[in-house]
Image 1: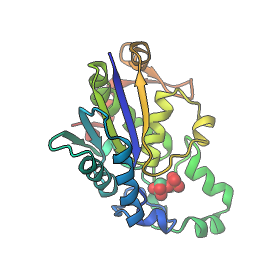
Image 2: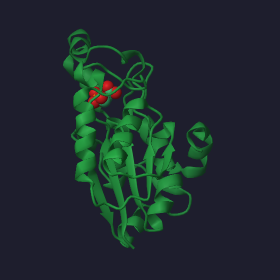
Image 3: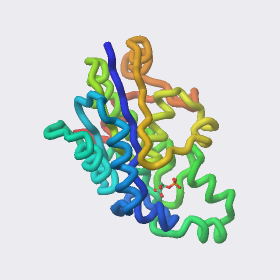
Image 4: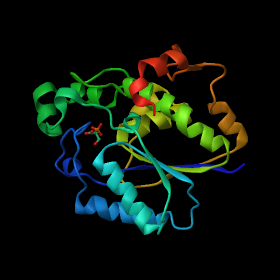
Length: 228
Ligand SMILES: O=C(O)[C@@H](CO)OP(=O)(O)O
């Protein structure tokens, strides 16, 4: 079995450039973002890709389009789902990050941006994001990897950080320090054993705080809107 998972954060967006909280706002790529997507495609030349997943947001979808264009893929199944969307930044969306830090303090803003379980006002914590990304991964992506498929996922800084937290079994402290550059492929070549360890035993799996046990059936019901 030779399963492969390629994760890519979208290329630079207009609000990445302007240093504004973006979250669920549907902002397009900058010229540099498009260039990053082309470079990601060039880097992936020669890779076998069986299926691609992306969010419902334009910046990720455009990045995927450019990558596939660069790879000259004529037809590939693309699954787009809001479970993979960026974490919602609530009332912070649209605000300048530096001005917000001046207003609320650097520490508060860092907590909103990088803590595991503190939500920004009206938005999602990384944990909330994890709660929708991981059931989607387990239900829709892991089964394909278990069949030996090569899967490309083009998504967002925080939706991918939550996935990486799960894949690498990182603690909340470790994920806090994990930053993803825009448009750079991160490739996981899974052995059977590694894949096996990702599959929850029964319907339950432990989340990275090592204390909570999630029941997948409840999560699926709670996040029905995120499954297709
Ligand atoms: O604004 C956002 O949606 C994200 C990603 O750009 O920002 P941060 O890296 O601060 O979580």
